[in-house]
Image (cartoon, rainbow over all chains, first blue to last red; front, side):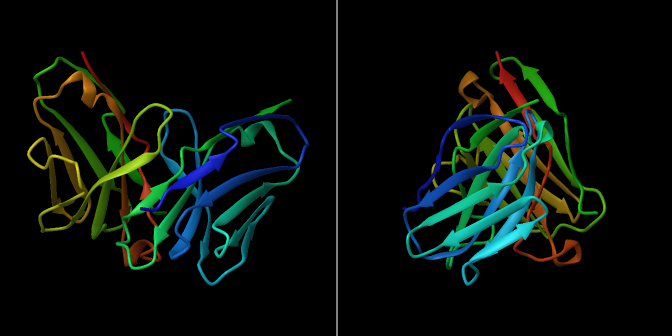
Length: 114
Length: 118
């Protein structure tokens, strides 16, 4: 059974710092991996999607890497800003799984202090 | 583009009553909609998948007679929590996908509905 773990559960950094969020998964047979952002009491915003054949994806100050064989992904946020404060969720879709079967981690709650 | 709305955003009800939550795709036709549940400090868990005009497919452990899902049109899916109990209190989030909205491996999420059962 696929399990997704995110470390740390919470992170507080001063504005301007670069930071890394970690995600690990137990079954490497994944179709893709996604990083989402969730603001308090809100839905999810997709940040980056990495197909199983890819190693990384970049969008602005965000860079996500994927090492499928070791079951790890990282989300790198450069020059963090207070507006980046949110909970970041990692989710995988198992290879052969249904499209809807996103398996989420519990998230990392990020706080960027001015 | 690809906006999904949910109504209501929050609801409080008495134990034993039924609550209906709506999920709408505002600017695309959603052939598939998904319902998730998120308990405090827990992961989002998929409850069911619904395709327009078909019966929903429920995940293991989700009672289909308690959580009624209707996907009667390409822009609307509803989740009805029947005979709600305090343990059903949670954050319910829907998502939708369609070729017309982009890649089928992309789900667009609604803002969620906070249900509190007293």
